[in-house]
Length: 403
Ligand code: PLP
Image 1: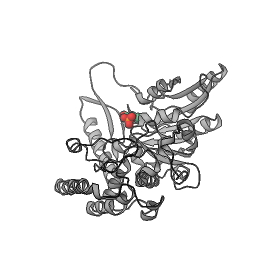
Image 2: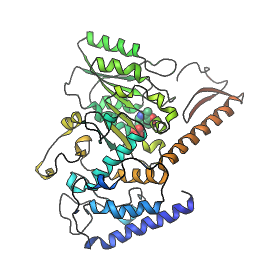
Image 3: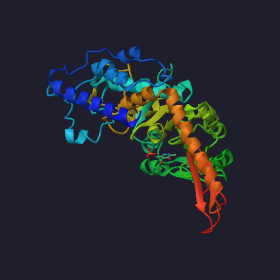
Image 4: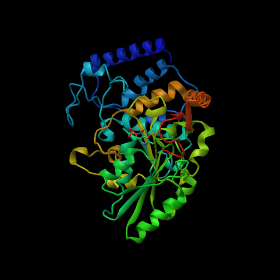
């Protein structure tokens, strides 16, 4: 989409939203659709080639609107008020400003059902194991969270034996991993990485054995696919069997680099992903989706639901079991309609458009790497995906291993 198309799209979207608010009083507050309606209307896979924004906007009206509860309607008197003003909408167009909350499935089926469908599309796009997908037979599924930090914390809280539990990651992991340990009151051991910035199985085993000998219970490992400092990749086919054998929850943080797995040539870097219990990447980092949008999958959602399930009379509905109750998969109760922006991006770019974007960005990094190498003033430290780390020669210590 070029700038001219963006202008046209933006104007059409604003007109659509303005028309929506002009007619909201006359719309039935509650949706008339049956639960599961959206799955019948959407293709099972993301489109291979990009589609026009006109088609997608038309589909918002055709298939999304009928599945929404209109929280902004003057005839809506349930739950609590939801704030909205045109002055705020001006800055927050990313979710089309049709702000509807989804506390429970019945509060807006389109919310949950589009998210289920998009997490299936996205999981297939990355070639994640079927067990992670909502459309598989088992108890797995995907959900959109606000950030990778929330995801790492949410996965950690599944454990129910407090006091003796201990978690691990590498010293290259993102600050949010250590923070998850702090929030969950669980020691998070940041184990030394090797020269390539990877956590090795030998280091992990040593730490596990030491903790077990002191009566502690190792329960959680965060492996990195694309570390923040150098975009290094832990070897899941090495760490995974250790975690499975020790009955340790293995979470994969692919916040940045996960997007690269839309391209088959990079999927070898997630070899062993089938050993993991949960997987996360941020489409808001590299997959053309505006902040915030963090995709998380779990093999067995029951662990999340058991940890976060707090029922109240005002949250009861009659549609239990028909679609995931995503409020039990996250910290907050209310949820935003993040699946809508994901749907727009996946349809307008298509699989090929996203692959082209990733390959182009990596080729720019490779070009930059060449420029650095050919310039005597600089030393190249590491280069991986779209990240090139380099330093000015002659100051401080020369670069020898991972920072
Ligand atoms: N994990 C990795 C590997 C990251 O690079 C980052 C952000 O830089 C995060 C987690 C945290 O992401 P978020 O801002 O979505 O919490």
